[in-house]
Image (cartoon, rainbow over all chains, first blue to last red):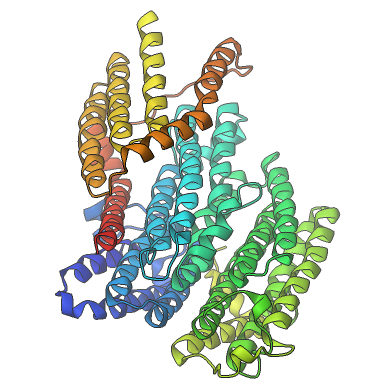
Length: 475
Length: 161
């Protein structure tokens, strides 16, 4: 019944638009219910995480051939949790009902795209669903661009995102055409066969597709759009994009290709190692020099995406496990940090960290949850991020990539440095008089942050038990 | 062969016009011309159905949509348009030369690989491909259109307000 994961959000969009205007406020809660069902479904074994297309009555009617597996479950779960968080943040940060209504609609459209990315096993279908997600996200970035008081940054951020995304789309379409000529089919299995046969056209096709995914996933040198898009987007859109969109359309697709098609083959593995290491370092050092909180978090995302690419260049089985786990950890922690940023922006009206300081005593819940997420991403035990980074280093060590393993460890220190700098500048030190009246943010913003922080803590402490549930035993 | 070369050169020129035009309407017309020329190329290669689709959807329907959306925008003054045209010319003048040089250069390059082209499996009928083999992708494309509709609703209604 995995077809329902595509059809239910689509049906929900139709339903939302049949609602009378005065009932539009209910749109958020319909979307909320769909996302909650999705998160629950990610756990359900009946979705048959066997990696083979399963017959279903709906599938027979619509002709959808999808094949969810453990990795799909991971993305579906992330999409559900992050989507719910983004909807809650939207309730408190988007001013008009109309904006919240369109936000819910576009999140549901993007959700169909993300679910498609999670379950398809064909490069052309992957491209189509990456585009579905991207088109919905372009509009989300510019959602409140005409609201009073907003400058042109949102439109500019969306424009940069569209421009680079179009380049990625062209590369991916070209790749699909080459693969069709080379293998006579666009399935991942056919691509694997063509690569194994050392067909140069198939290798060109995969290289082009990977370049497209590097743009979508904002890996260096294609990371230019990410910071502008994240910073310019309204708060709930930043949560949604940083938590799941970039990861699904770039990094998850990369994970899928690395595990189903590349299979550790040379030179794909080496490319992932080099791109991953460079991305980690460039992202981390760019994050160090930022004074806008959302920009720092954006560059931190670039750096962490590098870790996932690096893991895919390591030991095949352990690398995929580590990449999948880091994918989940980062999605949860980054969605939470952008929720914290939304809370701070709502209370202070600025994200300039040089103007902040001493907010810890005024916003203790925001400060506490932010500490959990930043320490987890930096890889401190016993939080979830520690385990995924440990597995990444082990995956590299197992195949003798000692240099890259050392880069991964040392870059974690840089991660810790910029996140400690964030904590110090925002929550510690002397408080500016302007913020004397600031209080803890509304429960609508701190409750999702606390829930996500608890996931991070629970996953870290109960790592052995959680791993099997998260990966559905299929990865 | 000479006709193919002429068609391809015209195609590139029309695409260049679409990229460099300073007015949205002119760019839309140039894009329609590019699509029409591409349809001729596809027809010449024997892809009749693809040519018909390119002509009806890309040169026809998309042009109508783009013109409709352009009509929702605020027109600029003639002075602003002239200034923008000058700015774009200054910025893009090397583009045609780079493209021509790249095209000439690439025509001399012999690809050093022995590529065996395989035809896709199936009976090759576009209807079978669309309605029987790639229904999932068709569903995805419907969603892309739906997202586009939301784009128009979100961005243009706001500006009118």
